[in-house]
Length: 308
Length: 290
Image 1 (cartoon, each protein chain N blue to C red):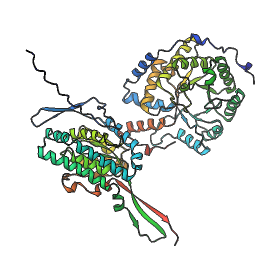
Image 2: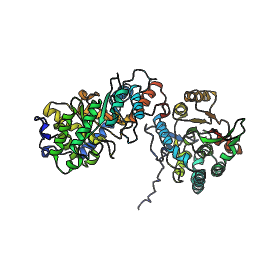
Image 3: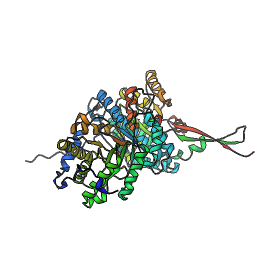
């Protein structure tokens, strides 16, 4: 596979013209989002929206078909004792587990996301990454979460990273492509902004913060910078790109802060699972416990909620 | 002529104790504590149910580690608390007197509190022998019962005693590997906050004891109903309070332990049965050859 297959409309923009990020400004803006008071009915709405945006994730070396089936069960039956709950947006697994998930989710409107491209490090050849992607798509994944080559990006080989993303996008076919920047390895918010611009121009349908394997994972700061990049890209090209913070978002309160940030940066149009996702495994239970708390008036215990 | 400058005394801010930290109540509410003559002694945090929830999260987080600590270590730590309290005796006597005790009563209560801690420190590696058993069964099994901590215990500390009631209940609860959230006496809350400082300086891991101040009327039901609480201890109130606690506790069938009418200064306030109250009995059937 050569890189000549890249669509001719995608062009690497001049990254030196990407605006610099004002870190102090970002911190202050993020602090403001956290001071919004979201209560009662607004909170109830927010909690349900969060559930519908979750990519329920298991990405462990110890994953087994049994574990993945269990996760899919959880995705379908979040907490049946509370009727009328939305289901999660997708389950997210490794490529060799996609077929298992496909079978377990048969007949349900839940997407299957698969990580690919030598996740989580991305340290392999383009051929291997393309094969990895095709394998996941052929097995039935409708969303692909790829990682960028951080080493190449940090070395300034932007064209290489750009071509790689474009080639994977091609290999995805109809599947949506989420591009993981792994912001914890990029170091500065300026680089996060540049990588976001690069990924979007290369054809990303979503940009995603992290693999969850590196600390720090998603923070409100990097997410804000990425949301701003999405906004400016939209003004420039008219194309909407989705956002997925992943890793470290485990409480409802924090997730609600993210929704506030989304609403105030990108607006109502992005407030759907089609354009915003949370990559998380333990967030769902915390949200469910909050919803149960609102329904019963009694604080809940993890003892009464299924683990996966 | 230059006037002599009188030094402005530094008054203490009485805060609550959650997860090894001393935050103010998240609600920003306070109530003024007055002495008998109606003079304000201190502004005290009026904790909200959110403070309580945060405290339960801290207690739950600390519980597995505390239960895993050896009995010997838990005893040592309780002994250390007693040592620290002994060193700060004067402060506690003073606080009890400004909250209405006479000097003699206060002295007696602080002494008894230190002794009570030593008492439970001693029980740390002994209650298990006393309450565990090898049970005779008519099958070929080796059958034995041992105690395990129930988990997170909430305590509505006695209202009429500022220190000894609180310490008796807390020590009996944590010595067995439980963690706890305590609501201090509403009328005499100052000693509880100062006791938190003693705990903080005594190697008690953060989250093992969490101390809130505030109103019974507001928090009693929360203390009993929270699903992540495994037992609730209450020490005051009439039938109405008992009804509230028991009904709220019924949701997840947690034990509601009544310790009303106990004279905490007397010997009746110290007993290994208080330790057993917040333990669960695990019985094991181990097959053996005939």
